[in-house]
Amino acid sequence: MGVFRFSAALIEWSESELNDVKRLRVQAYKKAWHLPQSTASALFIFPKTHAGKESTLPMAVLTQELLLHAERCMRHEDVSKKIMLAGLNRTLDEWLCDSFVELIEKVELWKWDDATGDFWSRLAKALQQSNISVTWAEQLDSRLASVHTTGKLSWAAATRSIRECKRRIERIGGSRLDTDSGVWGLNQTTWELMWAEEAAMRKSISALRQAGYESISDLPRIQKTYREKALVVIPRAMRICATSNGEVLIWVMQGLSQKQR
Image: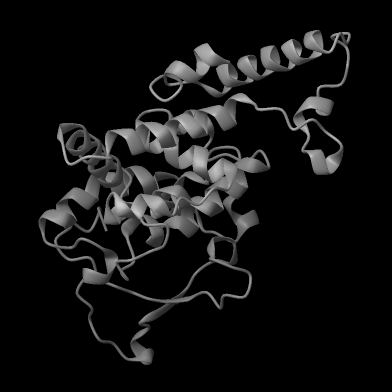
């Protein structure tokens, strides 16, 4: 485990590789206790409150080392901190987030392998999986605060319900081509837009930001009366929560072509 710990923060470990390390770790525990390899691994993995040994496993070590690496690199006002903050900015811009806590919320819908592309994505996913909230990081940079501070709705937060809907469909074996959109109460146009949403947003947000729209709250609003159908009803499957009435105001995205909107 010491060898794993030494480079854990810098290596892009895949989920299958982490599972292999976990399996070897549990085998080592069994051997140390002179137990047969057929012994249930749950005895070493389960927490003590559930009669387990609560042994240290690779994901816990990886999370510790990612946090320590961030703290060491950002402890002083030097080049290392500038490099880390530059990486944080790139990651937040890439995933349309305004802060690190929003990135943690976004990666909740990802698999581990989707988050291995850069350090900050790995850290966000590790914290989300471990249900850890880091309160000291705000002292290093305001974007690392453990709560939302901007008061604005970011592009990532504004489109989260769409990704959650897609995730629910995929979780039960649905897909873009093999699933009837009518089953989910969506017409074919909305169905296609849902699957293309993230790619389209990542492609178009740069143009919106260049036009001065840093968040969805910055978009110009056109006042309309109720009779002019300023409200539209979101399909039940795409609502933020079960109690939502599905009504949303239309904000016109100026600066984009009709196709991009």
